[in-house]
Length: 495
Image (cartoon, rainbow, N blue to C red; front, top):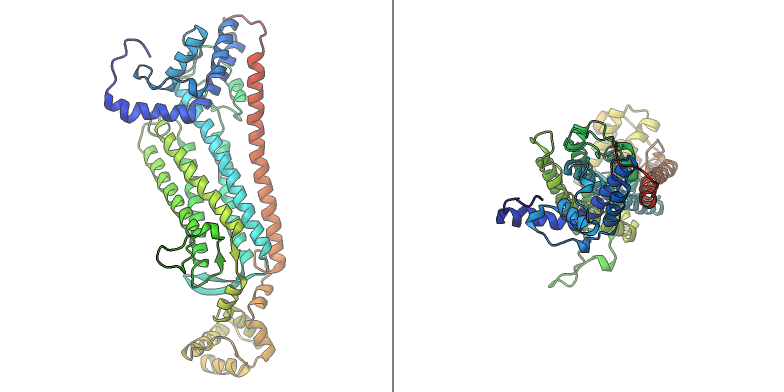
């Protein structure tokens, strides 16, 4: 900062500049150092900066560490200028890396590098959760469970069928992150304040040194855009919503009334007064973290709304602390849920007890009346509805239903004499038989389940491969920066 900078307001320092500097030193420093290293390497390569000046600047930048940064000093305003001061002290120069660079494009690049790392970490965690879900589905291919609609018993299905539905939703969430990452992983460097520069820079070279997949072509767009942040918040919000619905179900499974899911002892808490309690609080903590994450997403959208399309703090710089907290809440929720899913015990006997005491197989009895009884489906529907109503009146379930019961319901409902063999009725009302017949694509039948597991495993493998490809590109870029930094071919200063 220029020596004649006026004294800064203490409130502005306390509430904005000092906290923002502390965050930048803690979270953004390595990304800013990488940006400046790549920029100086480009200046040297393009003969814009003399070799000797570039060499000492590169050495000073490479040797800088977070612990070597000075405490906040209002003279330097932010980390960018504080780091310039550190480099100047170490190299004897002054501001060499600022040539053909603005804080606008530098911080836009830092934000994208930070967010790229966050997305990659979330993808790793999300794919770990998907694997745990698929492993449980594999173990419970034949475990029957009650499926509900509108909070009412609906039809028998399998635990695998439910978990594969969850895996499909998580696959779409992972896809959103991969798509968002492709748009995020572009370099704004070289845009300058917003109109580029008169020096002969090489934007593609800098992008390559930082592992970006290309450059943002329009320089105004490079420093003004915030849609990549809003899009990322949208992906976070969708994931938090999906996981929140799953956690709601798992808490229901773990309830005293259902008792189909038991968490290991290390993930529950008892009561200070009720010794019988075994509260599944780990799931509640996941739910709480997801709620906080969703609230933070709303803050991101609000901060990005109704601000100028240009370089302003609201939609990017001021949001990075919030986005980092959001990333941590969401990442913690995913990791904890993965551990819960991997270690929880699913109890088939609890589901069996529930299924036997309901009318969940009513659809199959109606279908059997169509296939074997010659009825149209509306007629069959009416017969089964009448049968269910009669048995509910007498506090009975489907247990013990025989040909006379079905014939009586048919006479009362549609005025027809319908006789089904007892064996046909027993088969129709058996939950296992209900599931086994549903082999249409995507159903819970054994063949359909095997096909979905195979597809889900392949989707997971592709997601992990895509994430690994980006990580390998970043690693190659890091190696290239180091190689280029030590390359000392003679070059003259531009022009």
